[in-house]
Length: 120
Length: 111
Image (cartoon, rainbow over all chains, first blue to last red; front, side, top):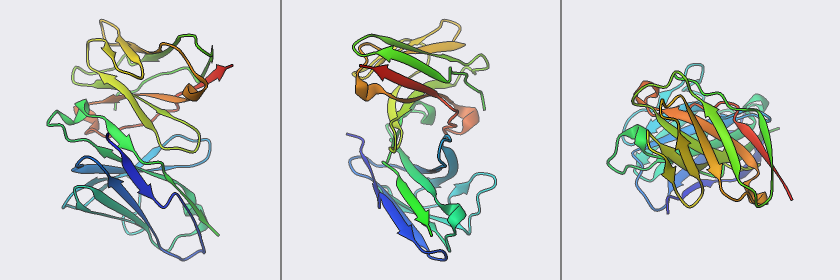
């Protein structure tokens, strides 16, 4: 159980293109999903917290107009990288927190397999 | 956010137990101790979490010190598939349930 599916797994596109990444919780409902970015040889950096039915909360330094997040249902969140440039090339990973009726910190997060984005 | 300290790397032999340490001396009373691992080119994978008592699941055991200032993730019999970066993360009210990943411990498993 607790599977998170992320699509696509990799994408290569030209500079200036907008790219949409989907994150789905397959067998559980997730009120909250998270988006991370990971550069080579570095750790994961949280970009934003996505709550179903409301606006996402972005971490300091992350441009909300650049990285559009939509969380329209309890099983789907999307990240759109708008007008992508080579410096946006990275490994993007989503996670979903199971809502087991426990305190948030007592619940695991389950991660997708990531999307490798390469902007030429 | 309360920080954790882990060794940069550790080595183990296949089929032997592995003890991965984590120090968190500034842990608050409501912080849960979470462990995740990341295999190459994959997203992280949840391993285990706990608050005060030791925890066991099918993947690992988590031993938490009585003063909660340190913990140890125990892999009972390492396999080559356990080679990964292991992250010890405190998750509590002060973090707003957001996970802050540090550098983790790179575990190498020798055949």
